[in-house]
Amino acid sequence: MMRSIKLEKIIPLHGAIRRTARLRQSAENYEARNLGSKQFPEIGSGEGRCHINAKYSGLKLVEMRNVSLRFGEKVIFDDLNLAVKKRERFVLMGPSGTGKSTLLKLIVATLRPDSGSVLLHNRDLTRVGRRRLNQLRSRIGMIYQYSALVSSLNVRDNLALPLEELTRKTRNEIDAIVDEKLGFVGLPDTKELLPGELSGGMRKRIAVARALVMEPELVMFDEPTAGLDPIASVIIEELIVRLQAERDCTCIVVTHELQSAFRVATRLALLYHGKIVEEATPKEFQSSGNAIVAQFLAGNVRGPLVPSTWQ
Image 1 (cartoon, rainbow, N blue to C red):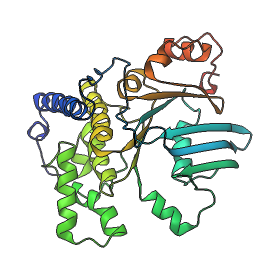
Image 2: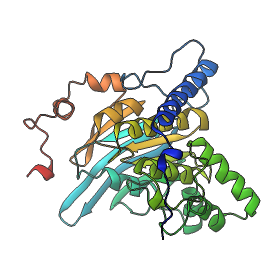
Image 3: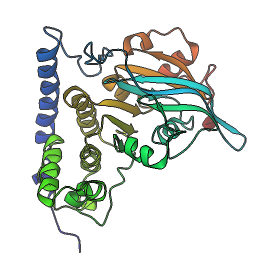
Image 4: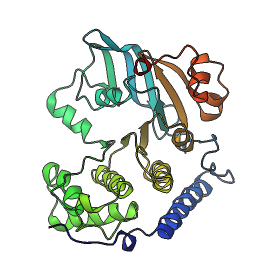
């Protein structure tokens, strides 16, 4: 029988707000240490900026070259080209059903394109062998839309699972990693809880902690704030910013929520009809002269953008 638990003892509302403030302060402190007097962008300002030093500037971590994919008669990607640089927060937007989540599957190679190349560290994932592919996958952390925690395992065991399956670490070493990752997401006292005993925002943060146990350099988020209340959404958004700033991670975020996109992104792209129709910084994106982008941002039903879900 499920244990009775008062969630306010784990994550009280005022505690969540304080933690959000600490996440923002942590990012500001990082910027002050590494970028002199420049200020960290205020959340929602559209002035997101990637903390990239000269060592990483311009280096591509992920690249898609002339990628095409069909499901039967439906064209998902049509000669798509895309590059994600190291240590940036890249946000991919687009109407529902345009293939945003499918693109993430191509990057982890659980799906292969009909043609074209998907590169990670300049290695074509469509051509590497199984062993090398698994090695490359171990450098990617994935946070799914519905968290995808194992419901029968408590939080500790959910985080420990990839370490137990993919490494030779001792139990003490695994427990130390679990404790560190839970501390990073602000949920150190949840190890014995089952996923069903957690709120939606807490489950999402536990999923982030699990994605980090293998120390990935690329972390991908599929609709990270979907279904969350405003405060939980801000906590997740600030966590993404802090993750990239403090852990040298590259983040790819898929979303169609505009507020979340502009709070998180250092660079934005819009996917429509199998192609990237716009790619820019948040400020440039907001002032884009592209009619499709303007319609998407305005939420106008009239214009060149006609998603299949509207028909």
